[in-house]
Length: 190
Image (cartoon, rainbow, N blue to C red; front, top):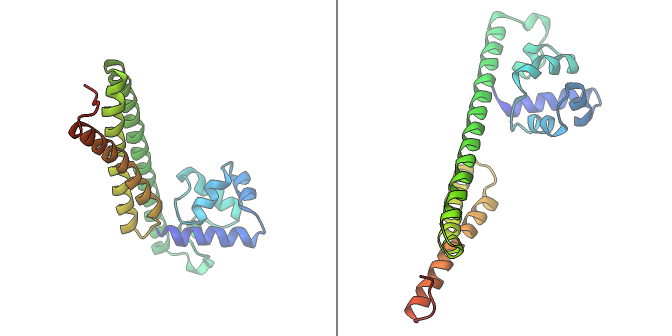
């Protein structure tokens, strides 16, 4: 299912009715940001929202799933089967997003717990000179990988790349500072 075509169809039908995104969102009990996301092709409505969306826009579920207006004569077994395939694709996409969000939550919780134990077991100097640079290094690498992924998908990537480089600079600058402090015989934390 083409999310750009889907979004354009939803936007055009909504505009035909003279509704704003907020008005459509209120009819569906979702946020206007969700409607905006659908119309920009950045996602699909929840599978449970497809039927209320079709009813609100006064189109058939088949038209929603095909993302185009259909005449009664155009409804065929092929169209219905294609619509069912689209429903399955949307459901699979939503499961994928849900799994990703669950994974992010688990990683975040584990990271917080590890961080608490690490900070508790180290002195403040260890946290400043070891933990924070390692965290910034990992964030920087992750942001640079995300910018590369966004570049490959032809999405805006410059801000992510700049943030990744900035996050990488802190550990590098701290490492250079400690190196030169050690070479010059200055105070270096033990």
